[in-house]
Length: 422
Image 1 (tube, rainbow, N blue to C red):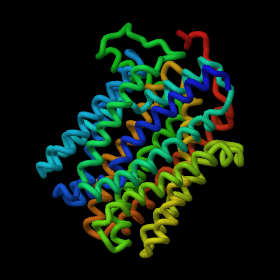
Image 2 (image 1 turned 135 degrees about the vertical axis):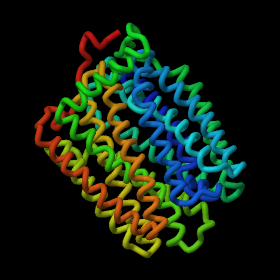
Image 3 (image 1 turned 120 degrees about the vertical axis):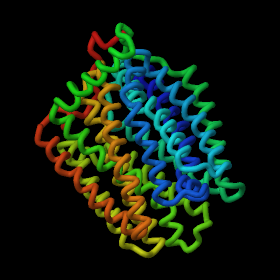
Image 4 (image 1 turned 90 degrees about the vertical axis):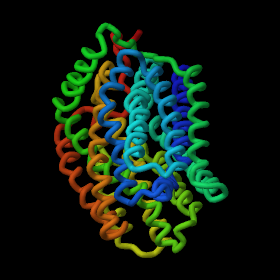
């Protein structure tokens, strides 16, 4: 790898490290935090659903920012928005605020994350092509997953320990502080390489253009369309399962106030993520097509979720949690590489944001529905239902596979076209 490409990768990895560390301080305790604020299971997961509503509503407008102002600008706006909304979450917890305020704050958190979705991956892929990187995207995304996994492990454990030593609100304050540090780093280190922002259109026209480009290069291209249409089921169930496993594991453990156990549970997933990120390129190499890897990981994820739901032993649940996290991690880099290779550079952030939008749509419906099933029948049953729901993504993955897109067997980054360079 040449020095310029190595620097791009280092910046990308630091961005992931900081973002994941900040987020993971609360991942192990988020559901417990919401319940402690006086919300029911249904309200807690409905609050999470409003987070995804925010992502759906703001995905296209923030995609305009990434494509017309710049990917760096989009990232900076995201860190500012997330730090403010995280502090607001802490204040709502102090006040035991009614649900409507949680819904609004969650939507604001969703706005913050939409500034990241699509923009960071698009920044990376364009910059790697511009600096003549010749390796595989799976390798870079896999390293990113390893860094994210390590950050998640550290943040989740510390978040649980800090919450137990102080209270459930302190990890949120720590998160806001780390986001401010990332704002400073990105302002200095990020540079939009291989991409020239298009500022020729006004905001409304640009929004319409982003939507039309999303449809043209996303839904109208069959191999991309089916991958995007599979996103709601994998994302919606995955987000619910991650947060539902916190109180569920505490139930199996027998002490629902052991917040450090909830943090360790999130950390276990992070370790599985590290393993998945390291092995993703090798697992991908075992199959002729990327879609084969994604389909196999999806099936294994469904089996693990159902097994988690019917299991009643804490330590066996931890083992199944590792399996679930590992296969989820293996699929991630391969799916990212497959989707990126099917999208032209100028529309990359747009279509990746559109994919994220569809994933968020799944969360809007699936999270509160599964949360309600947990209220009625328990967390175990809700995880089994989640596994059944995730089955719906499989026909879409097989449909994308049948298109025989060249990206399904690609192994290296596409070279930047002359028109893509500034």
